[in-house]
Image 1 (cartoon, rainbow, N blue to C red):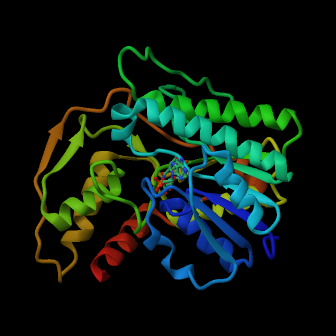
Image 2 (tube, helix red, strand yellow):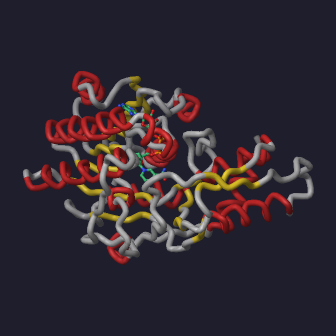
Length: 328
Ligand SMILES: NC(=O)c1ccc[n+]([C@@H]2O[C@H](COP(=O)([O-])OP(=O)(O)OC[C@H]3O[C@@H](n4cnc5c(N)ncnc54)[C@H](O)[C@@H]3O)[C@@H](O)[C@H]2O)c1
């Protein structure tokens, strides 16, 4: 269904976006990427520069004229995957205002673009749209719970995703074909492991650089880590005709592990590598991030409709990631 379709991927130079672009090009789509390179890297898209079906626009999704440029490349758009956002826990606290502006305004502008083109719209939301909801697994209809913003700034991100969902549902009421995806802790080789990065990549990077690993809090908080291919396959299925406008999908593995277990699994994989002489770093315990959720487990019963469930186990995915790091 993607053959010859005019597809815009916002944030397409980022971790998830660049993988999605690769899959869409393989399916014969005409792909336009807009990214301001705040976090994304051109090297993530290097493989496509000679592909005539691929166009990169360095631009900002909050700026209408940049989106009009994207719309003009192939005279219109059929599908918009809106992934551009400021992601990374440290930013949520340090740059709350920018997170809010970027994520909310970017979503409003890209919804307008979809309305202009009569394009199908896929919003990348987040489980953080549930805030500090204690009710697990996270199912559509569960309460979305945000604490007093005077206490901490964490929910600049989750609340921006909540508002993105509100704006998307509003557009649906006005007739737009739109669907929402909530990816659960994606991981894979291109994931950034710097201080603004995500936990799986941070652990691997600490091992490679032999820097101590700091566990935030006591390490008992759980997550549902999901392999990159499973996540981007999920985006593609949500955009397909199997799903309908108004649908919301949690795209996440049901294998729930604590951060301590994750660290132990990674250490065991590295320790079993006979050709790794770098040793293993020290573990230190640091302060937890304010507002960090204790559990984040997806309810995926909705996903039968699109025949999606995670195929790659955490053990397999971590081994794939270590092998990729070792071969680079
Ligand atoms: N990775 C995950 O596990 C995860 C989980 C839940 C939700 N999400 C959401 O999925 C999307 C993609 O996440 P990711 O992990 O690939 O993050 P990422 O940071 O790697 O990618 C986001 C991309 O958006 C770009 N960007 C940011 N602001 C922009 C703007 N104003 N204009 C144009 N480009 C802009 C960045 O440069 C980056 O390339 C985000 O919306 C994120 O909130 C991701």
